[in-house]
Image (cartoon, rainbow, N blue to C red; front, side):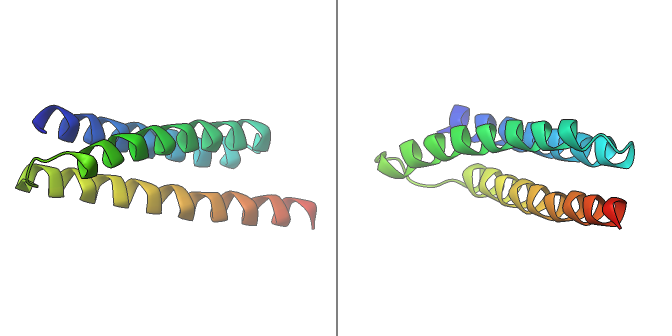
Length: 96
């Protein structure tokens, strides 16, 4: 369980990094790269979901570390979602 918790925290860090790199790309008006980075973050979200399902199917009890890891994943996904909206807003502003 501990190993999977740390895996989730690693995924969360990578998801956040890709998301913020996407925002930086959008600031540079490189919207293609911004969307590619968000797609990479989406792949990691899917991988983290597989780990979460493995944990839920397991017979081990949840630990404080696992709850902490879940919190990291949740905030990473929320950051990714908000950044996607910011990138979309920047694209629209660019077209006007």
